[in-house]
Amino acid sequence: MNPQIRQLLTPEILSTVNGLELVARVIVEGYMSGGNPSQSVGAGQEFSQYRSYEPGDDLRQLDWKMFARSERYYIKQSEIETNITVKFMLDASRSMEHAEGGVSKMQMAKVLIAALAFLARKQSDTFGLYAVNDQHITAVQPRFDQQQYIRFLNELIKIKAESTWKTGNGLEHIYSHQGKEMILFFTDMYDNEGDLQDFIRKLKTPRNEVIVFHLIGREELELNYSTQLTFEDLETGERLKVDSPAQQSVYRKKMGEWVDATRDWMLQKQVIYQPTYLDDPAPEVLRTFLKARKSMIR
Image 1 (spheres, rainbow, N blue to C red):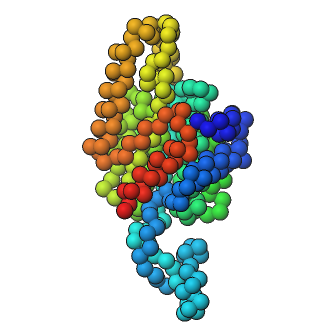
Image 2 (cartoon, rainbow, N blue to C red):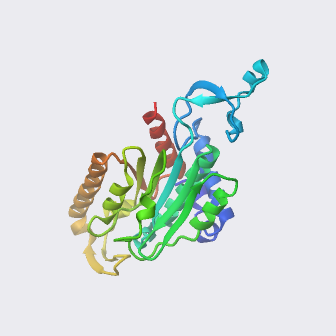
Image 3 (cartoon, one colour):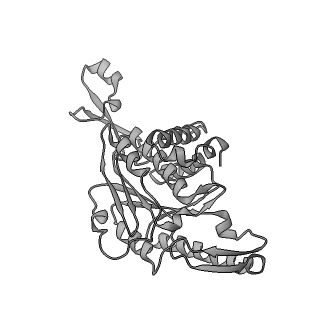
């Protein structure tokens, strides 16, 4: 990860709105400095035709050259509707506290969510936030107004990774769908009895788009340790002593099979799978995601 960003990923900075907004700006500037003209999180902006201005339209889409020629206000209309609802969803279970290189999955998820919401705001998309564990459900209902981003960050910094994933009832309001929407779900996919897959399956409809950012640590994936260690399940507290060198090959095989099975399941459900490693540079994660979005909407 970029050292400039890594040194900002401290509890002192990430626990304040100004700090998290600063990190989001640095990430977005890092993405844009790579020569990436497209900032669109949601739908594309390929020009199609003009239409007359209507009260409530985004003034940034006014074509002033047309006004100079006709003395009438016209809006540049896209081939694809540009404004959609972007819903950010966060797995706030205890396993998201797993950290490598000083960066936890929860920290990585928060900075990526803040950066993508920053871009959604610039795109004039409606956006909201949901975070779920067995103790709390955080909800910032999707809106687009001047205070939404600050409201969004205020709730984001309060979210803690605790307990387990929520099972049973209580998530019905999250499944409600209105109009065109894109759902970005940040999770490590650790659960019991396929609860997260059931949640993702209920999120997906023929009319929306669901993208899962699967947060993974390299050490977690490869078991790169040279001694015997005792591992503790962050959610259940269960401990297991492991001879890392002796069990490394079996462990890597099982982890690889699990990741492949997760990817294949999402492909079958028409859910976009985005593996995200804790040592990935955050601007590069944005670049990969937005490049994929751009190619999909052409």
